[in-house]
Image 1 (tube, rainbow, N blue to C red):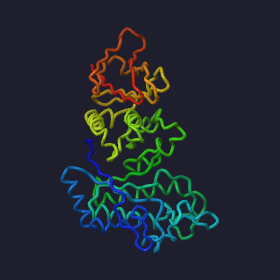
Image 2: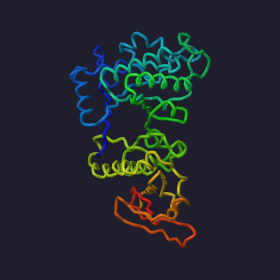
Image 3: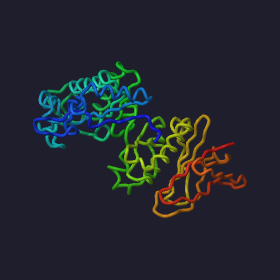
Image 4: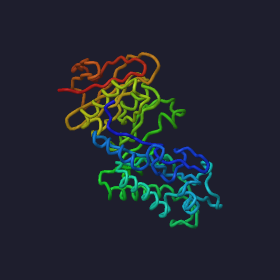
Length: 358
Protein backbone atom coordinates (compact mmCIF):
# COMPACT_ATOMS: atom_id res chain seq x y z
CA UNK A 1 0.00 0.00 0.00
CA UNK A 2 3.04 2.26 -0.30
CA UNK A 3 3.62 2.68 3.44
CA UNK A 4 7.02 2.21 5.10
CA UNK A 5 6.17 1.93 8.80
CA UNK A 6 5.30 -1.23 10.73
CA UNK A 7 3.43 -0.89 14.02
CA UNK A 8 3.88 -3.86 16.37
CA UNK A 9 1.59 -4.74 19.25
CA UNK A 10 1.23 -8.05 21.11
CA UNK A 11 4.98 -8.56 20.72
CA UNK A 12 5.69 -9.14 24.42
CA UNK A 13 5.57 -12.15 26.72
CA UNK A 14 2.36 -13.29 28.38
CA UNK A 15 2.04 -14.02 32.09
CA UNK A 16 2.31 -17.76 32.74
CA UNK A 17 0.90 -18.00 36.27
CA UNK A 18 -2.62 -17.00 35.27
CA UNK A 19 -2.34 -17.64 31.54
CA UNK A 20 -2.89 -14.00 30.66
CA UNK A 21 -2.51 -13.57 26.86
CA UNK A 22 0.44 -11.41 25.77
CA UNK A 23 -1.50 -8.28 24.86
CA UNK A 24 -3.11 -8.01 28.28
CA UNK A 25 0.11 -8.56 30.24
CA UNK A 26 1.01 -4.90 30.14
CA UNK A 27 4.03 -3.82 32.12
CA UNK A 28 7.20 -5.75 31.26
CA UNK A 29 7.47 -5.75 27.41
CA UNK A 30 9.92 -8.62 27.00
CA UNK A 31 9.75 -10.01 23.42
CA UNK A 32 7.77 -13.27 23.26
CA UNK A 33 9.71 -16.51 23.67
CA UNK A 34 7.24 -18.45 21.47
CA UNK A 35 8.24 -16.17 18.58
CA UNK A 36 11.96 -16.48 19.21
CA UNK A 37 12.53 -14.01 22.02
CA UNK A 38 14.69 -10.86 21.93
CA UNK A 39 17.15 -12.21 19.35
CA UNK A 40 14.43 -12.98 16.80
CA UNK A 41 12.73 -9.67 17.51
CA UNK A 42 15.95 -7.78 16.81
CA UNK A 43 16.54 -9.76 13.59
CA UNK A 44 13.04 -8.80 12.43
CA UNK A 45 13.66 -5.11 13.12
CA UNK A 46 16.98 -5.31 11.27
CA UNK A 47 15.22 -6.86 8.26
CA UNK A 48 12.69 -3.99 8.18
CA UNK A 49 15.52 -1.45 8.35
CA UNK A 50 17.34 -3.09 5.44
CA UNK A 51 14.21 -2.53 3.34
CA UNK A 52 14.13 1.16 4.29
CA UNK A 53 11.27 0.83 6.79
CA UNK A 54 10.74 1.88 10.39
CA UNK A 55 9.26 0.05 13.39
CA UNK A 56 7.03 1.58 16.06
CA UNK A 57 6.08 -0.53 19.09
CA UNK A 58 3.20 -0.42 21.53
CA UNK A 59 3.66 0.46 25.21
CA UNK A 60 0.73 1.18 27.54
CA UNK A 61 1.12 4.45 29.44
CA UNK A 62 -1.88 4.28 31.77
CA UNK A 63 -2.28 0.74 33.06
CA UNK A 64 0.02 -2.00 34.34
CA UNK A 65 -1.17 -5.59 34.87
CA UNK A 66 -1.07 -6.37 38.57
CA UNK A 67 0.58 -9.78 38.04
CA UNK A 68 3.32 -8.47 35.76
CA UNK A 69 6.76 -8.21 37.34
CA UNK A 70 6.46 -4.44 37.34
CA UNK A 71 2.96 -4.56 38.79
CA UNK A 72 3.92 -6.91 41.58
CA UNK A 73 7.03 -4.94 42.54
CA UNK A 74 6.00 -1.30 42.14
CA UNK A 75 2.40 -0.95 40.93
CA UNK A 76 0.93 0.03 44.27
CA UNK A 77 3.58 2.68 44.84
CA UNK A 78 3.18 4.37 41.44
CA UNK A 79 -0.59 4.08 40.94
CA UNK A 80 -3.32 6.72 41.13
CA UNK A 81 -5.29 7.10 44.36
CA UNK A 82 -8.35 9.29 44.80
CA UNK A 83 -8.83 11.72 47.66
CA UNK A 84 -10.26 8.91 49.81
CA UNK A 85 -7.22 6.68 49.31
CA UNK A 86 -8.93 4.27 46.92
CA UNK A 87 -7.01 2.99 43.92
CA UNK A 88 -8.54 3.51 40.49
CA UNK A 89 -10.41 0.53 39.09
CA UNK A 90 -10.99 1.63 35.48
CA UNK A 91 -9.55 -1.69 34.37
CA UNK A 92 -9.98 -4.77 36.52
CA UNK A 93 -6.69 -6.34 37.68
CA UNK A 94 -4.68 -3.33 36.55
CA UNK A 95 -2.96 -0.48 38.30
CA UNK A 96 -3.69 2.96 36.82
CA UNK A 97 -0.35 4.72 36.83
CA UNK A 98 0.17 8.38 37.72
CA UNK A 99 2.01 10.39 35.02
CA UNK A 100 2.91 13.11 37.53
CA UNK A 101 4.88 10.71 39.74
CA UNK A 102 8.60 10.98 39.03
CA UNK A 103 9.13 7.30 39.83
CA UNK A 104 6.67 6.25 37.06
CA UNK A 105 8.15 8.83 34.70
CA UNK A 106 11.59 7.27 35.16
CA UNK A 107 10.30 3.70 34.90
CA UNK A 108 8.29 4.33 31.72
CA UNK A 109 11.30 6.07 30.21
CA UNK A 110 13.45 3.04 31.09
CA UNK A 111 11.00 0.68 29.36
CA UNK A 112 10.97 2.78 26.20
CA UNK A 113 14.73 3.38 26.18
CA UNK A 114 15.29 -0.37 26.52
CA UNK A 115 13.19 -1.08 23.42
CA UNK A 116 14.93 1.64 21.39
CA UNK A 117 18.44 0.72 22.58
CA UNK A 118 18.24 -3.08 22.70
CA UNK A 119 15.72 -3.81 19.94
CA UNK A 120 16.64 -0.81 17.74
CA UNK A 121 13.00 0.20 17.26
CA UNK A 122 12.33 3.66 15.86
CA UNK A 123 9.46 4.86 17.99
CA UNK A 124 7.02 4.20 20.81
CA UNK A 125 3.23 4.35 20.70
CA UNK A 126 2.02 5.20 24.22
CA UNK A 127 -1.52 3.90 24.50
CA UNK A 128 -4.19 5.77 26.52
CA UNK A 129 -2.17 8.98 26.64
CA UNK A 130 -4.05 11.87 25.10
CA UNK A 131 -7.34 10.01 25.54
CA UNK A 132 -7.32 10.33 29.35
CA UNK A 133 -7.72 13.68 31.08
CA UNK A 134 -8.46 15.39 34.41
CA UNK A 135 -7.71 12.52 36.80
CA UNK A 136 -6.72 13.37 40.35
CA UNK A 137 -4.11 11.66 42.51
CA UNK A 138 -3.60 11.81 46.26
CA UNK A 139 -1.08 8.98 46.63
CA UNK A 140 1.21 10.14 49.45
CA UNK A 141 4.09 8.05 48.06
CA UNK A 142 4.32 10.25 45.00
CA UNK A 143 6.63 13.17 44.28
CA UNK A 144 3.82 15.61 43.40
CA UNK A 145 1.47 17.52 45.66
CA UNK A 146 -1.37 15.27 46.84
CA UNK A 147 -4.28 17.62 46.26
CA UNK A 148 -6.68 17.50 43.30
CA UNK A 149 -5.73 17.35 39.62
CA UNK A 150 -2.15 16.63 38.65
CA UNK A 151 -2.85 14.47 35.62
CA UNK A 152 -2.86 17.08 32.86
CA UNK A 153 0.46 18.64 33.86
CA UNK A 154 1.85 15.18 34.48
CA UNK A 155 1.01 14.20 30.90
CA UNK A 156 3.28 16.87 29.42
CA UNK A 157 6.00 16.03 31.95
CA UNK A 158 6.03 12.28 31.29
CA UNK A 159 5.93 12.66 27.51
CA UNK A 160 8.80 15.15 27.67
CA UNK A 161 10.74 12.78 29.91
CA UNK A 162 10.22 9.74 27.68
CA UNK A 163 10.94 11.56 24.42
CA UNK A 164 14.13 13.13 25.77
CA UNK A 165 15.31 9.77 27.08
CA UNK A 166 14.77 7.80 23.86
CA UNK A 167 16.32 10.58 21.74
CA UNK A 168 19.52 10.32 23.74
CA UNK A 169 19.76 6.80 22.31
CA UNK A 170 18.34 7.49 18.84
CA UNK A 171 18.01 11.21 17.96
CA UNK A 172 15.19 10.67 15.43
CA UNK A 173 13.13 8.31 17.61
CA UNK A 174 9.47 9.36 17.87
CA UNK A 175 6.79 9.26 20.55
CA UNK A 176 3.13 8.85 19.58
CA UNK A 177 -0.03 8.87 21.67
CA UNK A 178 -3.54 7.46 21.39
CA UNK A 179 -5.01 10.93 20.96
CA UNK A 180 -3.80 14.50 21.23
CA UNK A 181 -4.58 18.09 22.15
CA UNK A 182 -2.91 21.45 21.82
CA UNK A 183 -1.26 20.76 25.21
CA UNK A 184 0.51 17.64 23.95
CA UNK A 185 1.60 18.79 20.49
CA UNK A 186 4.88 20.33 21.73
CA UNK A 187 5.93 17.10 23.52
CA UNK A 188 4.88 14.38 21.05
CA UNK A 189 5.53 13.56 17.41
CA UNK A 190 2.14 12.23 16.35
CA UNK A 191 -1.11 10.74 17.53
CA UNK A 192 -4.12 8.73 16.52
CA UNK A 193 -7.61 10.19 16.30
CA UNK A 194 -10.74 8.59 17.72
CA UNK A 195 -13.33 10.70 15.94
CA UNK A 196 -14.55 7.73 13.91
CA UNK A 197 -14.24 5.29 16.84
CA UNK A 198 -14.76 6.58 20.39
CA UNK A 199 -16.62 9.69 19.21
CA UNK A 200 -18.46 7.95 16.38
CA UNK A 201 -21.82 7.81 18.18
CA UNK A 202 -21.61 11.57 18.71
CA UNK A 203 -20.89 12.57 15.13
CA UNK A 204 -22.65 9.84 13.17
CA UNK A 205 -19.25 8.40 12.16
CA UNK A 206 -18.59 11.39 9.92
CA UNK A 207 -15.74 13.90 9.85
CA UNK A 208 -17.04 17.35 9.01
CA UNK A 209 -13.97 19.40 9.90
CA UNK A 210 -10.40 19.29 11.16
CA UNK A 211 -9.99 22.14 13.67
CA UNK A 212 -6.78 20.81 15.23
CA UNK A 213 -5.07 20.37 11.85
CA UNK A 214 -6.31 23.82 10.83
CA UNK A 215 -4.97 25.51 13.96
CA UNK A 216 -1.74 23.49 14.12
CA UNK A 217 -0.66 22.42 10.60
CA UNK A 218 2.32 20.56 12.07
CA UNK A 219 0.05 18.11 13.90
CA UNK A 220 0.63 14.53 12.69
CA UNK A 221 -2.74 12.82 13.13
CA UNK A 222 -3.35 9.22 12.03
CA UNK A 223 -6.64 7.40 11.53
CA UNK A 224 -8.65 5.45 8.97
CA UNK A 225 -12.12 4.60 10.25
CA UNK A 226 -13.87 1.32 9.49
CA UNK A 227 -14.84 1.79 5.83
CA UNK A 228 -13.28 3.14 2.68
CA UNK A 229 -15.72 6.06 2.84
CA UNK A 230 -14.39 6.94 6.29
CA UNK A 231 -10.78 6.53 5.17
CA UNK A 232 -11.54 9.01 2.39
CA UNK A 233 -12.79 11.49 4.97
CA UNK A 234 -9.55 11.17 6.94
CA UNK A 235 -7.46 11.86 3.84
CA UNK A 236 -9.68 14.73 2.70
CA UNK A 237 -9.29 16.58 6.00
CA UNK A 238 -5.52 16.32 6.21
CA UNK A 239 -5.15 13.23 8.39
CA UNK A 240 -2.51 10.58 7.80
CA UNK A 241 -3.54 6.99 7.09
CA UNK A 242 -2.84 4.12 9.49
CA UNK A 243 -3.54 0.98 7.47
CA UNK A 244 -2.99 -2.71 8.12
CA UNK A 245 -3.70 -6.03 6.40
CA UNK A 246 -7.47 -5.65 6.59
CA UNK A 247 -7.20 -2.92 3.95
CA UNK A 248 -5.39 -5.04 1.36
CA UNK A 249 -8.44 -5.29 -0.91
CA UNK A 250 -8.07 -1.53 -1.45
CA UNK A 251 -4.26 -1.65 -1.76
CA UNK A 252 -4.01 -0.11 -5.24
CA UNK A 253 -6.26 2.80 -4.34
CA UNK A 254 -4.56 3.46 -1.00
CA UNK A 255 -1.15 3.31 -2.67
CA UNK A 256 -2.33 6.09 -4.97
CA UNK A 257 -3.33 8.25 -2.00
CA UNK A 258 -0.06 7.60 -0.17
CA UNK A 259 1.95 8.49 -3.27
CA UNK A 260 -0.12 11.62 -3.81
CA UNK A 261 0.48 12.81 -0.26
CA UNK A 262 4.24 12.33 -0.70
CA UNK A 263 4.34 14.02 -4.10
CA UNK A 264 2.40 17.04 -2.81
CA UNK A 265 3.81 16.97 0.72
CA UNK A 266 4.57 20.69 0.75
CA UNK A 267 0.79 21.25 0.79
CA UNK A 268 -0.76 18.04 2.18
CA UNK A 269 1.73 17.39 4.99
CA UNK A 270 3.68 20.57 5.70
CA UNK A 271 1.41 23.18 4.20
CA UNK A 272 -1.23 25.55 5.53
CA UNK A 273 -4.81 24.35 5.83
CA UNK A 274 -6.97 27.21 4.57
CA UNK A 275 -10.45 28.03 5.94
CA UNK A 276 -12.88 25.29 4.93
CA UNK A 277 -14.42 26.00 1.51
CA UNK A 278 -18.18 26.39 1.53
CA UNK A 279 -20.24 23.81 -0.34
CA UNK A 280 -23.86 23.74 -1.42
CA UNK A 281 -24.55 20.42 0.34
CA UNK A 282 -24.20 19.60 4.04
CA UNK A 283 -22.99 16.12 3.07
CA UNK A 284 -20.15 17.44 0.89
CA UNK A 285 -17.08 18.45 2.89
CA UNK A 286 -14.14 20.26 1.32
CA UNK A 287 -10.67 21.26 2.50
CA UNK A 288 -7.98 23.41 0.91
CA UNK A 289 -4.21 23.17 1.42
CA UNK A 290 -1.48 25.53 0.26
CA UNK A 291 2.24 24.82 0.20
CA UNK A 292 5.32 26.48 -1.24
CA UNK A 293 4.73 24.92 -4.67
CA UNK A 294 1.32 23.24 -4.66
CA UNK A 295 -2.31 24.01 -3.95
CA UNK A 296 -4.71 21.15 -3.29
CA UNK A 297 -8.47 21.01 -2.73
CA UNK A 298 -10.07 17.83 -1.45
CA UNK A 299 -13.80 17.09 -1.59
CA UNK A 300 -15.58 14.11 -0.02
CA UNK A 301 -19.18 12.92 0.09
CA UNK A 302 -20.05 11.93 3.65
CA UNK A 303 -23.63 10.98 2.73
CA UNK A 304 -25.31 7.85 1.37
CA UNK A 305 -26.51 9.20 -2.00
CA UNK A 306 -24.86 10.61 -5.10
CA UNK A 307 -24.61 14.39 -4.81
CA UNK A 308 -23.87 17.26 -7.16
CA UNK A 309 -22.47 20.32 -5.39
CA UNK A 310 -20.61 23.57 -5.85
CA UNK A 311 -17.40 24.13 -3.88
CA UNK A 312 -16.49 27.76 -3.31
CA UNK A 313 -12.74 28.23 -3.72
CA UNK A 314 -10.68 30.32 -1.27
CA UNK A 315 -9.85 33.73 -2.71
CA UNK A 316 -6.11 32.99 -2.94
CA UNK A 317 -6.82 29.91 -5.07
CA UNK A 318 -9.68 31.29 -7.16
CA UNK A 319 -7.76 31.97 -10.38
CA UNK A 320 -6.12 28.57 -10.76
CA UNK A 321 -7.23 25.83 -13.11
CA UNK A 322 -7.72 22.41 -11.56
CA UNK A 323 -6.78 18.85 -12.43
CA UNK A 324 -7.80 15.59 -10.73
CA UNK A 325 -4.92 13.07 -10.47
CA UNK A 326 -7.41 10.32 -9.59
CA UNK A 327 -9.56 10.66 -12.71
CA UNK A 328 -7.57 12.88 -15.09
CA UNK A 329 -10.43 15.40 -15.28
CA UNK A 330 -9.67 19.09 -15.74
CA UNK A 331 -11.72 22.13 -14.72
CA UNK A 332 -11.22 25.72 -15.81
CA UNK A 333 -12.91 28.00 -13.29
CA UNK A 334 -15.09 30.69 -14.86
CA UNK A 335 -13.05 33.88 -14.48
CA UNK A 336 -16.14 36.01 -15.18
CA UNK A 337 -18.02 34.70 -12.17
CA UNK A 338 -17.81 36.87 -9.03
CA UNK A 339 -17.62 33.66 -6.96
CA UNK A 340 -15.23 31.00 -8.22
CA UNK A 341 -16.50 27.50 -7.64
CA UNK A 342 -15.73 23.90 -8.54
CA UNK A 343 -18.71 21.90 -9.77
CA UNK A 344 -18.46 18.30 -8.56
CA UNK A 345 -20.57 15.16 -8.57
CA UNK A 346 -19.65 12.51 -6.03
CA UNK A 347 -20.81 8.98 -5.40
CA UNK A 348 -21.55 7.99 -1.77
CA UNK A 349 -18.28 8.06 0.15
CA UNK A 350 -16.26 9.25 -2.84
CA UNK A 351 -13.11 11.37 -2.45
CA UNK A 352 -11.99 13.81 -5.11
CA UNK A 353 -8.57 15.49 -5.07
CA UNK A 354 -7.98 18.60 -7.20
CA UNK A 355 -4.55 20.06 -7.90
CA UNK A 356 -4.30 23.78 -8.64
CA UNK A 357 -2.30 24.82 -11.72
CA UNK A 358 -1.37 28.12 -13.28
